[in-house]
Image (cartoon, rainbow, N blue to C red; front, side, top):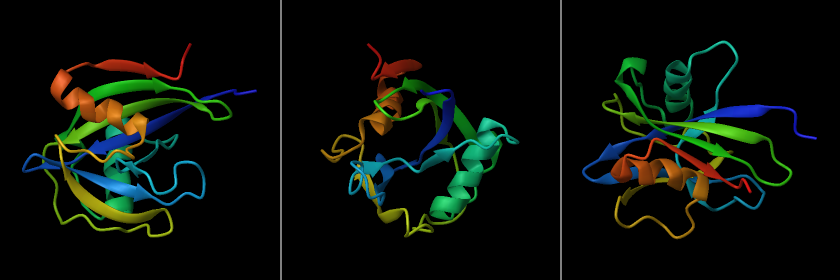
Length: 144
């Protein structure tokens, strides 16, 4: 039985109409699929602080939490997985050039044109990316 909801923080880094995605290394059905840099919120941190921490840990960039703007909330579920609330933050600015700091979890980082996203993008990440254009603040995925 699922007894909790995980809170994920996702980073939307956009530069020159391109978005940064990472190629997931997970050994499960999401292996070799593209997704946003993201991670789970820790119990002792605010959402923006958690997103900034994930940026440093995963892609080696520094982001002031005040430079993160919430653009979307997604509530998702899938069979056999904990339900999740995903908070998608657009980074208005950051310091440093993104690089793969977690090669055990990520095969590669790549910038994609916003209008030419890869076909093997994880649907969950797509919720936040779509909100950049639509302005839709909330969505659900996997619920009946």
